[in-house]
Image 1 (cartoon, rainbow, N blue to C red):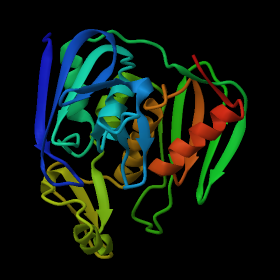
Image 2 (cartoon, one colour):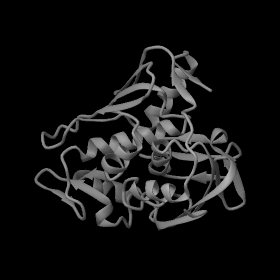
Image 3 (cartoon, one colour):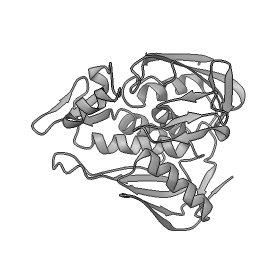
Image 4 (cartoon, one colour):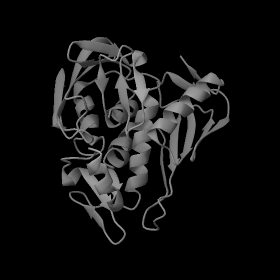
Length: 268
């Protein structure tokens, strides 16, 4: 067990060197960038750039691409005793999934706590092409259904709240993109300087990946990973069952906002 773990690399979207330090400390989880610090409950969420960014209400603190780290926190049920220090404005891409974050958190020996979000009544919320079906339940269950229009890719992935299962099956699922999107992403300054083993590129005639062998359900599992991370930002993943069809970062944050407003979920 250690008191501090450092993960370095480059940011997915900015391409700049990035560093995150996870440090055991009493009190609530705090995110720190430079001299500015905020608790998770104080953060403003933004899912508009193909990822989730967080900022303080006064905008003095802003950190991009937090969803993979947040997914690891959610899977481990870490609710306190942690300071997250980010340098470079973005959480490093690391392995393209959440395995390095899971292992780093495990080495800190942090206490686990229950979700602060609970589904209290059935509801269905549609945000554009995304649909979120929420059902009460005693445990955590999160499911995604996606359709990339490619018969080579599986459409569904599910996680039922087990931390060991998340580490072995969900956390290794890498960031992915489609070959026809790459040029546009580069022009917009996204996905620069990405290590080949951290991403999967899906083309019409080939699927490019380095490192671990690609599996047909890996994109769906990565979408599930992202969803778990986005739900963690709201105090989840919640007690109950979440089924998300074609989820997206911005859509997930809006769906949780609406669910809380309409009484479908409660924050404790």
